[in-house]
Image (tube, rainbow, N blue to C red; front, side):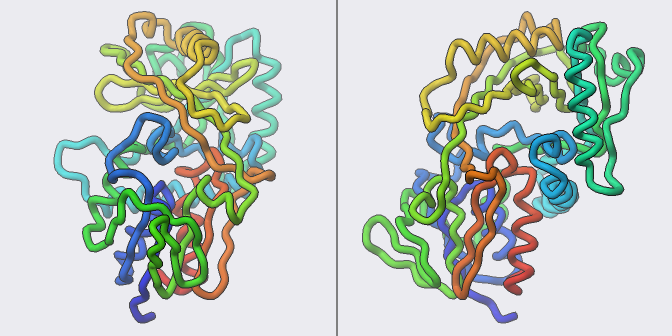
Length: 352
């Protein structure tokens, strides 16, 4: 197909991945985003992709999202590995994507609740994909020596994680041919054009709407609040993401380079972008300490909130007509699903 002109509204996970993919396919791409630049923002006002812990957990997420999301997630996980290899990290930097599996944990008193979750996971797992594998105490301790004794554990083989801020940066860095229009907002996205906040019109063969919550003018979106905490924990070795079956949440602990561990779980039906609440911080940190006792000496270095764009059914939407593509509503599955949704949409439109 001949090279097309593409105008993308939004430079979150989807916008950056779309821009990089389309530019590699030879198209002429422009991206508009209200952020002041491509750098990470941790004030709750930037793209939700910066805040996300970066877990690639198609099996764990299928508990509530269903087998369709799980199947897309497994496909996307492999694509993230391909994308990370193509982005060619400079020597010495940590790998953008790791695939060492993840662990599901429970305290002995929550065994019954854990068994119910495991049954749902096994039922929702796509055909041919792994299901949770029970670990004996010795196996669990060998995989993650820092864990508290007496925890129950199951391995979610094949799952992975990515370094979300680094991946966001890499997608921009590796697409220098893309025209990035920072500090500009697309008020409307119509077939073949973006209408910007200063009255300018960007015309293109294809307009792509990847604005997340900015697309409330055309979709029944709402923001779902998430809260995370970063801990600096020198000497605490964690090889893979952990999920604790908590009475109210699935509390996760995700290792990051530099002796950092990201702790999160909250999912609040609110569009409040204010700082992390005391109640959430206490609950999350208590749960994290119960899993890894050595975190008692960790230092809290960062607390962050953000909003994830969700539709009423919590399912993503991909719509297109002549000259217009819209992808939105990825909810808590932005990193998990983005490559599969992008690949399918661009293939259908014969753009990649």
